[in-house]
Image 1 (cartoon, rainbow, N blue to C red):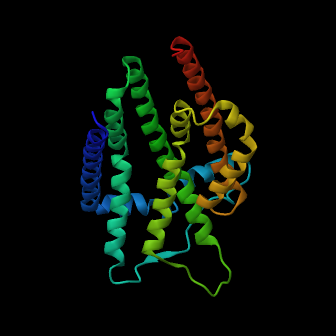
Image 2: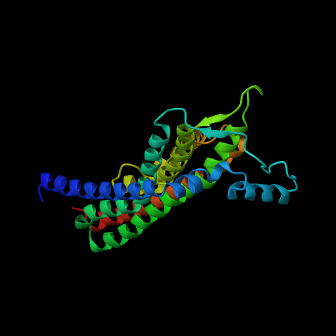
Image 3: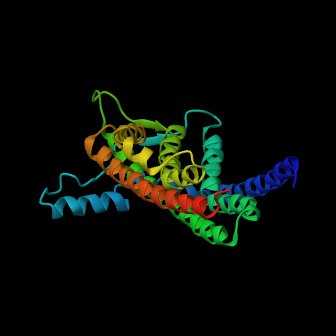
Length: 267
C-alpha cells in the first residue's frame, strides 16, 4: 500500500473506534442511575468498600476506630442551569472512553498486524491483552483507592468552621473521573516502554540510569492525582514504581530480542 493508502486504512480504524466509544457513551448516558447513583456517588458514602476495608485494616493493626468513617461532611449541588446535563454528558463520555479502550487497542492492533510476522502477531496479541489488563487495573486502582482517598481528604479539609462544604456537581464528577482515567493511562507505562524499546528509542540501560529521576517524576505525578497527605502519596507511588521496574524488565527482554534479530539479519 502507498503512504496515502495506509493513512486511509488508519482513518477507518480510528472512525470505527470512535463509533464504538460513542455507542458505549450513549449506553452509559441512558444508564444514568447506575452511572451516577452507584458508580460516581459510591465513594461519597461512608459504607463504600474502600472505607470499610481501611476501617478493618486500622482495627487489625491495633489503631482502633480512628480511621473509620462515619460520615462525609459535604453535599453535592448544581449551581448552573445546565450543570446536571453537562455533567451527565461528561461522565458518559469518560465511561465511553473506558469501555471503548479495549476495542481501541484491538483496532490499532488490526492496523499494524499486516506488517508483522507470524511470531510477532502472536506476541502482539499478548501485548494487546496486557495493555487492556493494565488499563482496566489502573481504572480500578483509581476508582477504589485514589478517588475515595481524594474525596475523604478534601471533604474533611477545613480552613474554618464557618464554611460548609456544598460541592458543585461538575467539580465532584471531574475529581472522580480524572482520578480514574489518569490512573488507567499511568498504568500504560509498561506498554509505552515496550513500544519505545521496540523502536530503539530507549534501552534498559537508559531506564536504569535515570531510575532516580523517574522516581521524582513518579512522586510528582502521584502528588498531582492524589490528595496532599503522606499515606495517599505512598499508596500511589508504590504501584507506579513497581510498574517502572516491570518496564525495565520488559525493556531488557525486548532489547535482547532486537539484538538477536540484528545478529540473525546483519544486512
